[in-house]
Length: 452
Image 1 (cartoon, rainbow, N blue to C red):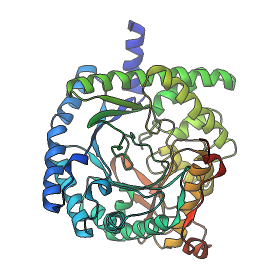
Image 2 (image 1 turned 90 degrees about the vertical axis):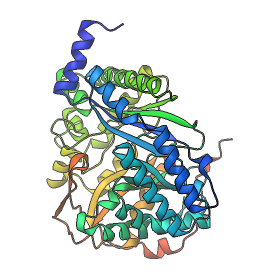
Image 3 (image 1 turned 90 degrees about the horizontal axis):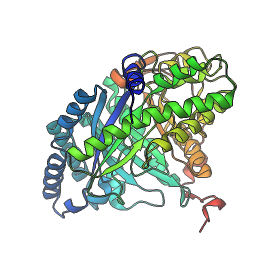
Image 4 (image 1 turned 45 degrees about the vertical axis):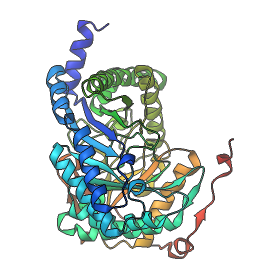
């Protein structure tokens, strides 16, 4: 039972420490929309999305007012469109992207995810057609997000798919060059992608999910940072306990919102994703949490250890607060969306290589990282392959959302605005992996994949 102290503490978290519900995401299955006629398929997709999510935004706003808890984003994720479109032509898949955009505009949501393909073991012609037009789809729409899963621990790494994604990222950067290559901010390459992730750009509705579902992503880096500051110079075991208790409280808020949203929308409750998702706002930074734990700067020695401890404590606290924790759940380290990460890059403490090491112990991967626009496709493929291999070898989700900002060089910056923030252009080593990447084929699954 809540008491007055709990209520006042939660109010303080919201008013002073940037606690919010980062997203309510409705997942919608499109499997019953399949049609051999491209126009009919698009019509059925639009009708189902707008019918099922008709009240999503209104319900989110009502809950926001009722409890005084900010709900930053209302989003929709759909079945990976490659599973619905099948053998559609590239033009057909582009038409489907515009259909998703139109549905999102009708609903008034922030983003729609699921312009996606699962190609970790191979690609059908339809999946190749989809990937071939991802850059155009992201350039011609504003609210559509795309993801491609190129590897799993069970299947290994599909290097042919990575080669296609290196090309897609470069073309998306060029086609959106007049807007800081923002198309790349809506495109993520995954290993071991989860099917219930509510966060963009990687959200899609998995094939094992019900017809519709409500997934909620909570966020509270500022709350955790404040709790660490109050804890003072305690030892690390005590500090981990402080983080666990704080994560529990944050997750309970998400559970409350998720349960009510699911009931009002007459949709099953799926999961709470308890990822610490930062924003450019002062005091809402994962980097600042790590520095509050005792580091002089995020990116310095000790950063990976501190992040591993933070991630573990957040998960342990969260699973006690909700029976259905899923998605990514941990700590995000997107550079452009985290004021502390930006500052660490600008002072030279945080490099691409250190970020890669950090991804071995946190939620996702190399996220919202701006690099020079003249970086070659082969180098981008190498960056993706390195990061994806961490996920495959460690049986965890990893991802790459990298932005080769057209016309920008090391020392410049790009400003995306809003939650996407701004990013300094990070240096990239010029040495090419072209011969390695050109071999193609699949990197075999690791031996520990044989667990049956």
